[in-house]
Length: 219
Image (cartoon, rainbow, N blue to C red; front, side, top):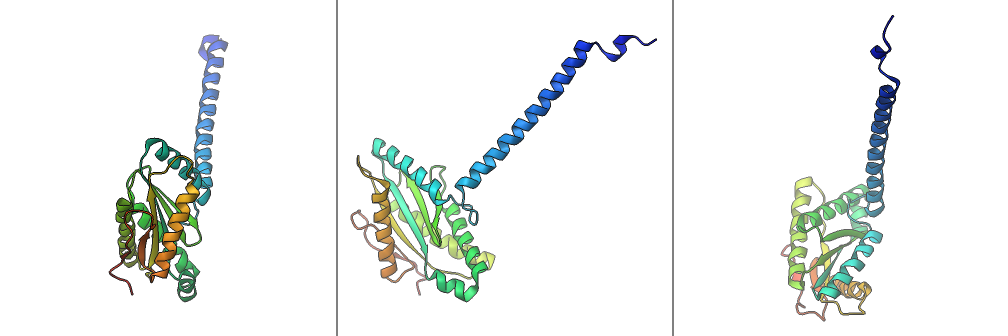
């Protein structure tokens, strides 16, 4: 007859089964965490461009504004809009328009370096970049990097080129000031860029740097 020891004691078998079950539960928990992380990313990311979506951007902007107010540090907002995007779609097709938006987002990602910098698709063909601890001069540098990078990426990827207009607002926020105030200033600057012939960068007029920075490739 075989000894019961050959099959292991009941306690040892139970312990082995328990360890196996714990392993399965641990793997399931890890898989669930990965899934939740992906769902969270999907909820905050624009599906076409990979940039933050508007809701997530506004939530981050409020946090950044509160921090800048407490620290007395500058906060810059860069608004980017495609010039004549409807005409671009009519001429090249909507797939080409989507590719252009993806290329603009890629240009923004390449032009910002710090984890605190946030690039978002604000809506349609409009993008926004939040730059904590950045002055107007620093924001202008980022804006022109985006313009230069966009031209290079369009040529590299065979994307029909398009110009962009950019509006910048930068300030050290005061107590009681809202992100809406900064957004309104950046929108106003963007509107002036459109009025001034497009394909240029304008800074909000109540800030130190007021002149337009026009691309050398302006038509």
